Image (cartoon, rainbow, N blue to C red; front, top):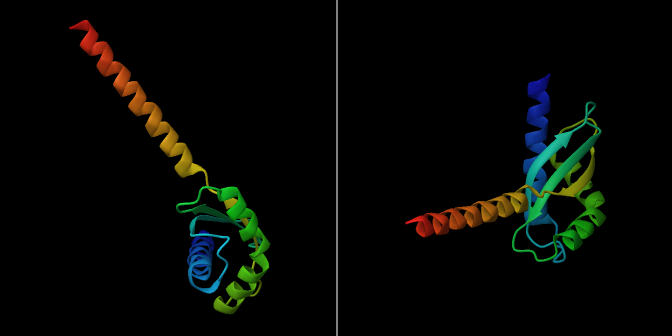
Length: 121
């Protein structure tokens, strides 16, 4: 059963990604990238985590994307052979922002260690 759920998540993610890239013609959304799809136990709700490439205001893009989720769901229903297509909720994926922040902190720490080593010589 876990394999079926994994396949459904992968198909939903790939199809939503294609819909956002090629079918949805809304310039307010920008360039969304589907990073993760989570399904609840009975496959009635899909949480789709997205990030926006090159966006300065990702929250505004996410609000616009959530306004279009009915269109995305109907296009998904046409593409997939499921008895019931799950409801869709879009969330902003902050993993990349957190990774950039951690990398910046590590680089700062490395620079401070180098300065300390130079001061000891």
